[in-house]
Each structure stands twice: as structure tokens, then as C-alpha cells.
Image (cartoon, rainbow, N blue to C red):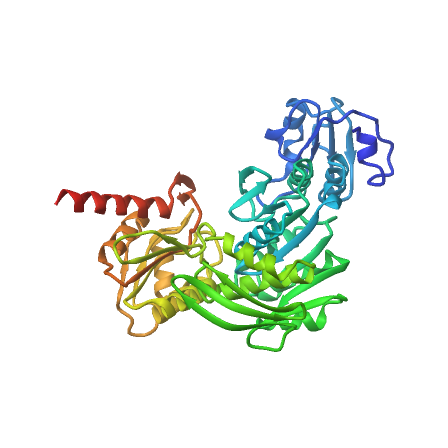
Length: 490
């Protein structure tokens, strides 16, 4: 591939036919023979690193402006919008791979990860091969890569799609975040289905208003193919609004509380999992899953409705659901012989915490304890609301740290505590997260439930801008192993 072909239609200026070996947007990732595309990012501007990219071997540069010290070392092509140019360049370089995949995009404040895992598992139960891009990992055939963003950037997206095509995959289920939609990361893609789970309140540090956050989520449906399907949770008020307002010819709604094309019925929840029935235009489909919690009913319905609408057999849904035992860090139950129900969940918004606590309250015979904090340098408005939810729905609360980053952990905790319902006193403050988890587990008794919320699958903790290894699950496993060893020594 050469520079002239990559930039055809992007610029009217003459472009040299320089051979291009690869593309990079970060100067430190440039390899000899690469094209460097300079973009303004949230924390740094790639234009400031053009000279470094050239020193590292870039043979051409695409940018909105040239560096102060203009160099003749390689062609520098000026474009009006380098972010937009990158989409076209990456798509051409990798051979339009998304055209060879059937894409399903899932957006919503909560439930994206579980829904995409369900979609992938059910598709594979049908005999198809599917990739996954999301918050926890990127799955490409037999390879599992660590996730850097819920939705990768446009260059990474095209690279991963090309790898999926190379592996012989037919489908990709991907989470589409509000950041990705606002930043046009998915420009150039066409989705066979767009799925809306729900709208809560999150990322207001970035979007500023809930209206802007909602508008970003809505943009997903601009990328659904004309013959594709929009799958909407109309139990959510914003989902009901979308059903009335998005200009899409094929809308399939699902819900339990409001009229919908796919109706959720006969829901039963236990520590063994969830059973429900989908009453749909494609038949009445009874489903059983080992996923825990009433809040997962809507995630199951989202995945099931999508695949029924895309033509999958109802029996495939049943086999697929049976194959997925749990999603990492999403109400993940830790096996224990203590009689205590120990669960780890990613819930880091007020809505997510409320839904998970309500699900566990329904199942818990003893006390319900929650251990959580809030992230630093992120949306502060949710902190007192999360405190209120915890004080209303849990019997005991331990407030701790959750990636405080550059903020004082105690200040974050005080903001959470300010939301407690009047008179609530059954709480402790332990900024050290490991200490908090150990204290909570040690205080629990048979039939109690301990929810460790906020970090889920994450394997790190960021304190004062320094990231260190830390995983809730590892702390729990160490505590259980120590308790078992102590019992054996008695």
C-alpha cells in the first residue's frame, strides 16, 4: 500500500506514492516505514511529536498543521481533520475488513459487557465463529488480548477486524461506549444490529450533561445498516423514547414492564441462576442461565431478542445460555465453603450499584454487606448518590478506595458518606482496599452476602497516579486459603 492510494479523496494536493508499511498515531509506536497520523487527543496533541515520529522512522506524516521546525525528511500531508482522515486511511490499509464481518454494537450505561458475552456465546452455540471487543478483553479467535479501551480507536478497530477476518470469524459483538460515539471512533462502520440496554448517569466529567451523554448513546443507531435492526429496552424511559424517535425501519423492542414486541415473562431468580420466558414473534422461548441476579434478565433479553431478530433458532439461545457460567467481574460468585455468598461486581455507577444490591437483597437470607468506593478524577456527582443507594439497600457498608488516582481517598469517601440516608450508622471507613475486603469477609457469617463492588475484573489500583497490581478476586482467594489453612491447623 502506498501513501497516494491511502489518501485518495482525502486531499486534493499531489501526494507521492511512498510505500507504507504500517500506520501509527502514537510517536513511540512508530516503526521504520510507517505513516504517522498526528491527532489532538484528550491529554496530548500528536502534532507536538511529529519530529520524534520521523526520528523513529516514519516515512510520511498526515497532520492538520506542520511542526514549527518543518522538516524535509519525509512528505508531510496537510488535511482538514486528521481524525476523520485516519478512519479512511486505516480502513483502506487493512482492506475494509468490517465489510466481511457481521457487527453487533451494544451501548448503554450498564449491561454492555454481559450482553456482548451472551451474544458471542450464543453465536458460537449456533456453529458460527465470533469475536468480542469490550471492557474486559478483546477476543480474536483463540487469542485473548487485554482491553485498553471499551471501544478501541479507529486504527486499532480496523487492525482487530482484519485479524478476525484472517482467523475466519464471521461475527463481532462489541461494546460501543459513549466516549467512542462522541469521538467518532466507529465512523465508517455498519452494524447489522444496534442494541440499547439502558441509560443511567455516568461520565458527566466528560459529557458535562446527561442530555449530551444520552445524545452520544443515540448516535449508535446512525451506524446501523438500512436493512439492520435496532434492539431497544423500552422498560427504560430513554429506550422508549428512542423507539418513537430514531429514523429506523426495523425496531424490535423488549421489556417486561411496558408493551414490547418481545415480552419478558415468568422470571424466577435463585442462587442457581435465572429462568425466564421470551414471548416473541419468533415463538415462546423458555430460557435458563446460571447468571445471577434479576438485573441480568434485561441483558439476557437484549441478547436473545437481537439474535432472534437476526434469524437464529430459539434452540440455539437455550444452548448458548447454558454454556455461559458467568462473566468475569460481573456479579462473579467466588466459590466458598464458609456459607457466605461472596460476589465481585464492576458496579461503579449509582444505577449499577442499586440494581445489583436489589438483585442480591432478593436472594440473601442473612445480612447484605457492600464494600465499595468511587474513582478519583472522575464524575463526582455520582458519589453521594451511590452512598445513598448503599445505605438504603445494604445492611452494612464499608467505604474504601477504588482507583483514587490524584485525589485524596478520604475526601472521596467523605463525599460518598454525605449521601447516606439520615441516621444510617452501620458503616466503616477503611481506605486500604485489601484491609476493607478482609474485614468484611471476616465479619460475615453463614447465609450473609458480601458484595465487593466497583473494580470487577480490574487487576490494578491507581493511587496518586501510580498504578500497582491489585485484584479483588486475588484478595478473596488469599483470605479463603488462609482461613482454610487455619482451620486445618486447629
